[in-house]
Image (cartoon, rainbow, N blue to C red):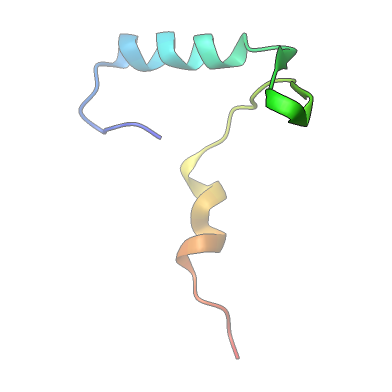
Length: 52
């Protein structure tokens, strides 16, 4: 997530940096093997309350 008012070129650079993350030691949990791009719609499951 990032602020809506960040410049587009900065958003692209931040995204590129995260997508380059591969096989970084992550404490005693093993390796952090990367990030995957997503979009705003992926968070709809959190925004929409469950139906009872």
